[in-house]
Amino acid sequence: MFLKCISSGSKGNAYALQAKDEILLLECGKPFAEVKKAIDWQILKIKGCLLSHEHG
Image 1: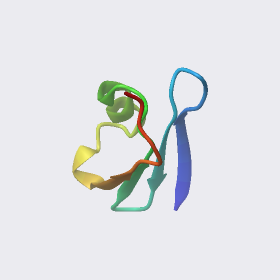
Image 2: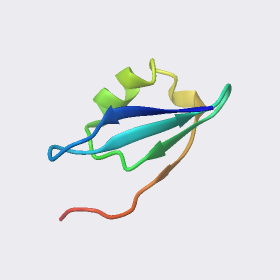
Image 3: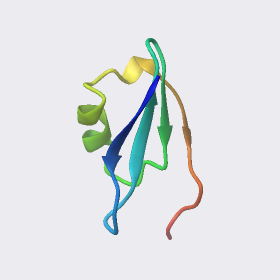
């Protein structure tokens, strides 16, 4: 299992916790197209997404 930093900074945070057959998205403060590209388009492996907060 490893944690992939998709983006971290003032323009948005996004991380993917990846195991062999599962991906848990954390924060996802970036456009979903960027997230999909970062996880090599393996969207069927996404099992959930955890958000700590949102911006209006």
